Length: 350
Image (tube, rainbow, N blue to C red; front, side, top):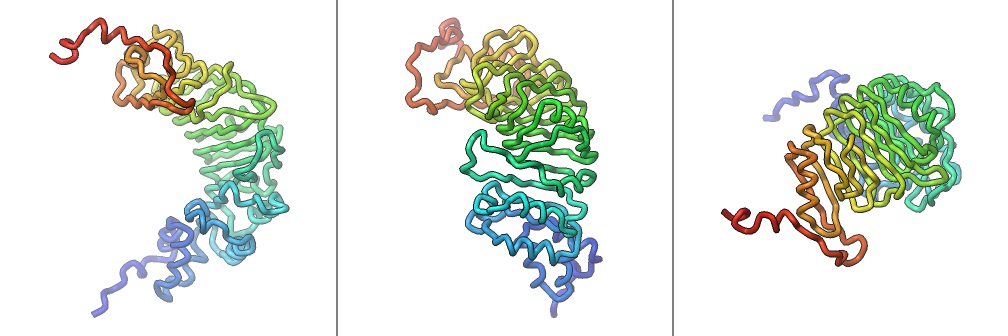
């Protein structure tokens, strides 16, 4: 005897929420389950995410995407286009602006796009932020903008935004401050190779995670200061090559738990009077008891350096050390381990 289909008995609104949580391809396939499900996909909140497809399947024709958007009757939840998607499009700005203006994306909660390609050169001109993206200011929870220029104005307010990523974005210092001030619920900020700011100062009572990747272009990031972030828990340095003169200063982040990776080419990092140059300790007079996780990358393993870091972070629970060969063979400079000499083998093996 055929078992009862209890799931199909759920209201359309509930089924639509379930379908919207599936990947784009799997969501479309639900139409084949039963006649009861045929209309659910087209009326459910749209989740069009090409990042969830295998690389060989991401090249959906432009017309097919336009067809999906024109035929969808429900609201939009997520719209995500991979970085390289527009590389063969002669008019990417017009294409994206038309897509974002369709009724299928009304009420969009997550937006992710990048105008450039994997071959985008450093300093290449960035296109303006799509005008049609402004209609999602009041609904976006997650936003990732790539290879575009933010206007020099104070009118961009995202009252519900919690995650913001700027990749290869040109934005002035004043515009960035205005943008962050317009995100009262922001919890995660990612700055990846964006340019236009030589100094960035973070003052936020909501941020819990910050990631920074070295900038490029005419205006390089020289100074990054976390002045007041009482709820910040993660601070990630996402590049191996930061400008030599760059200085990162953490003035007040009492809940910071995760830091890394500190690479041999990382910038000068200041925690009060404690100073780190890449993966080396310059001064360790200030202790940071909140730190639980630390990631280091070194050319030569030095137990003294590890001990120095542990003195700065006395409550450390996880320490990750990666030996780097990015510069060819490990350097042959003499590395002393004074701690091992002071406490010989009987101490280590009682």
